[in-house]
Length: 489
Image 1 (tube, rainbow, N blue to C red):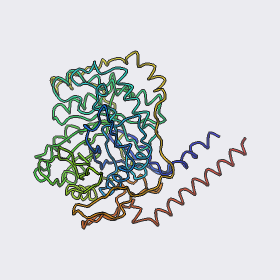
Image 2 (cartoon, one colour):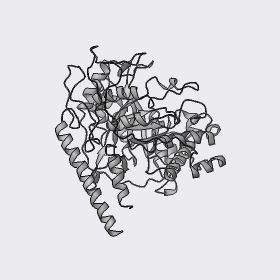
Image 3 (tube, rainbow, N blue to C red):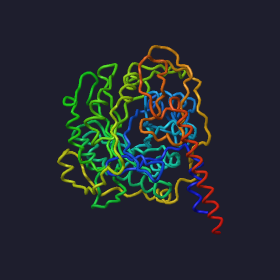
Image 4 (tube, helix red, strand yellow):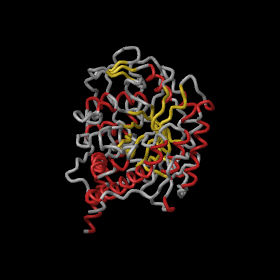
């Protein structure tokens, strides 16, 4: 009966995104048919934390992935932008995320998750990291892994965000980041059914980011399976300002040269300078998916909702209704017309073994301490790592969840209400489309858009036929194997 298990699983989650994999410095989107080859995946994303980190308090753990009504609303809006990936900074691992994660999965959207939170002892203290690296902290981050490990659209976990951001933190914190990554990798290996990538999000400091990347991407003692190294590297970059910068003045040429020899995927975990608004996001077409595309794997615009720092592309009212800002239209146009490279999995370069060079790292930033003698796992966390979190809250996709509109009103940049703002759920054979699931309509906007081949509204006939053939072939193959197994028993 073991032969039947993978097929039965496939039928049960026919709409599930295929988890991303990593080959060298590229994310790989595997082909749905094992007889075909996969392709390199580029992130067309946005940072998603409505309300901001300050909303997550001791008294009220506001979790954007536990409010299905808001997720239906936002998944629709994200599809209009052509988004295929979001980053979520703070979650409560005790809450129910099943419906929201299923909504984003079915909408063709991958999720990067930070394992930390703004609360005490739920992140590494950059000033005094040894005080925060303890069993209580590890319980927090292992609980996040448990809560999200079953969702195939989890693209990876961020072990930290700008923990290293000045000379002092560069001296005391690096080895704790590698220790956290080691612990996360070991926990995932022991308690998850797949290898979920773990990486880091770095501060926007030219010399410091280079040293941090070099320190986190290398293998200690030349071991090619070093669990403490990063699987990917996110860069928070605000060098290119809309309407002001270009390839040379932004520093993008220097950025490319800095990371051109990377052995792991690199992407912008934040970008989108707001010195001049509305932002035109010309760094996407002229930089990120052009001059940087041979090194970088796309990026996540900061950020989805308008907060006090004025980086949003939509305005969310106190009642939860949404209105597009002018930045929204500009970002949509850039993403829909981005010259996305098409690279097959076979053309992605195999990873090269990078051995740690302490002196070389030190030369990039003199205050950086490239200490590879990592802190040992706290003794009172050993049982937790070995046996897992007791009574952990483990989420899972919901079968047969219906696509629908939210109860909120959505208005375009002209203030006109968008009718029938229903999120599109893709058929199994289209859900991993590189371009996301942009609707053929613009939600009431007069701006022209490119219709995505993955749009259920523009290709329903083809999509339905393909999905039916796919389901029929899977069902037929399952039945054939069932008969064959029974004949052998």
